[in-house]
Image 1 (tube, rainbow, N blue to C red):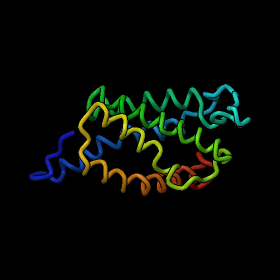
Image 2: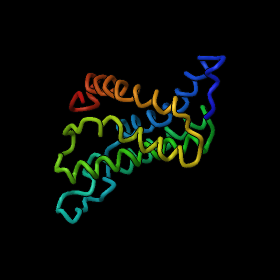
Image 3: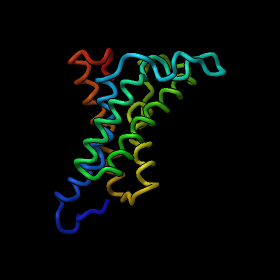
Image 4: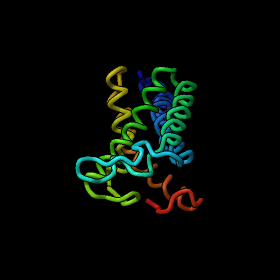
Length: 165
């Protein structure tokens, strides 16, 4: 992503939006479309705890990836969109795995991990294949926890989530 911040501040805002939208959509649609068969198929890790838990499902992961990928494709291109969407979904799955290892149950808060898991993974995936400017990354790093909090409060008020965090 290359910015045009020297002349057009709206260009920078649009590039940040293009960067964030696929991962936010993927993360949100995974929640909205979730349910059904869990990704871990009920399997347990060597510590005796579930690998991921019931909150990570095939339907949610595939739906989040597809919707995030489509939004990304429409905004910034196929490769970028799929990279950001897949990074977002994998980041959320990895965080769930970590939370189980930390003996946190589904829905228990893990400050910063809950807000930044999908963002950091998507950013990492993106930066491997594409040029990620530091200004865009840092802007997203600031905006993401705030938007995550607002999104969770909205989902809670709409009874999509059981907890407001």
